Amino acid sequence: MGIGQQLYKKAKMRIPGGTQLLSKRPEMFLPDQWPSYYRKAKGVEIWDLDENRYIDMSTNGVGACILGFSDPDVDAAVIQVINAGSMSTLNAPEEVELAELLCELHPWADMVRYARCGGEAMAVAVRIARACTGRDKIAFCGYHGWHDWYLSANLAEEKALDGHLLPGLEPAGVPRCLIGTSLPFRYNNLDELVTIALNHRNEIAAIVMEPLRDHDPEPGFMEGVRKIAKEIGAVLIMDEVSAGFRLTTGGGHLLLNIEPDIAVFAKAISNGYPMAAIIGRKDIMEAAQSTFISSTYWTERIGPVAALATIRKHRLKDVSKHLIQIGQKVQAGWLEAIKGTGLSVEVGGMPPMSHFVIKHEQSLAAHTLFTQLMLERGFLASRAFYATYAHRDEHVTSYLCAVRDAFTVIAEALSSKNLNSKLKGPVAHLGFKRLT
Image (cartoon, rainbow, N blue to C red; front, side, top):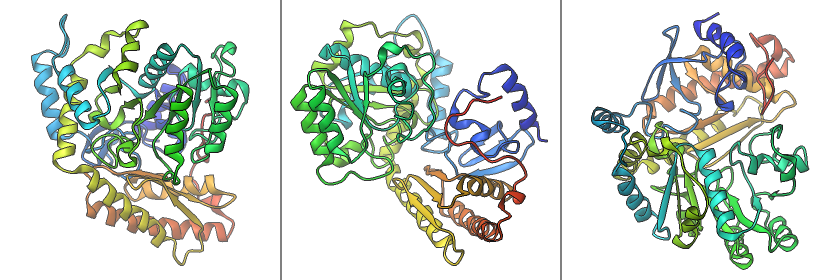
């Protein structure tokens, strides 16, 4: 057993759930074998506590490190302000500089507030929308974090959130008085939103959604959402926490020619340093002054400086073009790798945030074996791949060579019905599950 696995056993005794982020739980990848912790990360390379070196072809900081781990330009900017003092009694001037840049990239927006992570930034956006409209209910599709406003959807119906990225999310601890305040609809299903709008016309404070993730919007869908929001007086909030900066410098909604009322950014905006931004129209954002939204560490200096350095490099180097090209090569490589194996594999997602699913009754075990086989070949890999600027063609080529080998082994194991015997540990978890 490696040092990382031993440390994780201790972590489960001291940290409820083992990790701070569900998506970094070893049980989600390869129980009892995943390295769990890192000593160093640079570019697309990670060294674990046992000095094993891996190429990260999985989520690369769960989508945060869009330029690659420890980008030299972003790190240099951060080091400079650390040396100059990252916190004081006065405010960081970079807050204003970043606000100007974000509004330049999104001409429809006038004002900006900050937070330090996606979930809390979404909670801020919802609070502002409720304060602005004087209404309580939220219509939404997609995944939007861990806060009460979102999880309350599962109070009314136990599996209401299962089709919105993460299944099995428990609303324990969410006040039951919030039942019926969050109303889900499915992406590309405008009729569901129409029904919500008809039944709750004067109660909906906001319509919350991602511009795109697994699928492109069907013709008329986004335009229909925008029209409904305007007709019922609801704030249209675009959650750009995942989509933002993948396809262009700024929000994915820019490519769809849809102007929201509020857009929320985190993850890729600052290349691994904690930072989030809520941008919006002046008449709506001014409502932030009528409700208490305030936090000491939202005023530290590192986040804005990291965001400025990241965004400027992103624009200068046309990073999104590179992400799309790398993602397209990986998606095409997955499809090529299954040829002749007999496997049925479904590939989806926008190219910079790609994923595949092995279509089989033992799919979860098959995905677990894939991660195991790839780890043995020196890759951190799962059924998801998030491209970074640090990924190069040689990384993709060597990765896809290993993928072909892994798919061949999986296909043979499924055909001979001995897949479980190939696994060196338990099958990975899917979604939220309490640890023992």
